[in-house]
Image (tube, rainbow, N blue to C red; front, side, top):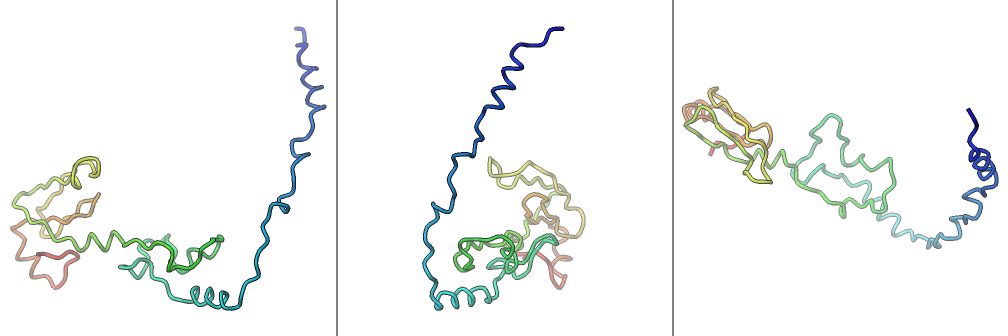
Length: 163
């Protein structure tokens, strides 16, 4: 089998190529001058970092074992803005869903679609036979059978409001 005539030409061209970074400039020439910091701004930043930061406005603790507390979440990487008052603090969805009242039903099986349409979730069927509050696995809406209302109202505390 004869060797390809293009192969030696390709090897020769690779040897003659100029390195790609030969004409690159240093990034130090493009850096802007950093103004001197005043002691007033340094103490303000230190005070902001020492202040206790809650996880969410309506939640004090973390809700997952793998989640870091908000006060230690931004310690490793560098951020341009570390003042937590300026960072977004969305409400905890778990606390908000636990404020939803129980939906009482006379049916043994309830269908939940999460509001339906594109913003909803797949339809699931929830069994309400047991004397407990049954929760949708997708959106967390609580359902209970009307037959078990007296038992649920007699409990000292429930995770959802019964009214």
